[in-house]
Image: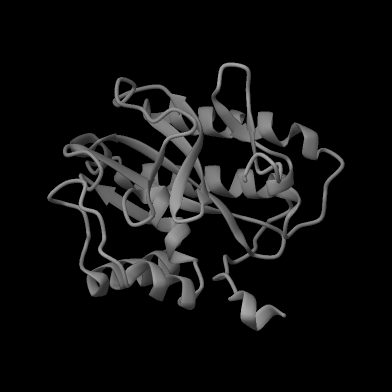
Length: 219
């Protein structure tokens, strides 16, 4: 399980937090890795506060995106996703970042099944989703507009390890009308900066995110 392998830790209040092992996988262990958790939260809070939005940090848990942290400052504080919440990988900005950098074999498997529709805006057509995922890999940015909750949106980016592995994703979320208004370019840049700052904490400075390699090809 995620807890057994120290990928996620469960607190006394039954909420979930990032485990240290997640940041050891695929990258050299830094002397300051014990402080990573606090640093990640600090970056999320800083990003959320700039525009009064909500910031999320997600990791992949099998075929779902698992929310492990949030920093609430604005629009969606009453419908925020607490640590331990999961979403289908094809819905939401951070979730689709994780899906975009899955291996081709993994993607074929996931898109070969019926895709859950959370709202009328959810992408459930495999070919349309593949086009969206290619755009995410090209730009490094994912956009979600009403596909999880109508009227709410998010902009996401990958957290990258020293080996270029996408080990997590962050997003800034809020009311769509505000998120995709005049401040959209600045919000997008803030998302990039927050993701880069968290990547820096695990040695991922300047690393271009790479797709996962199928296990059969890595042996």
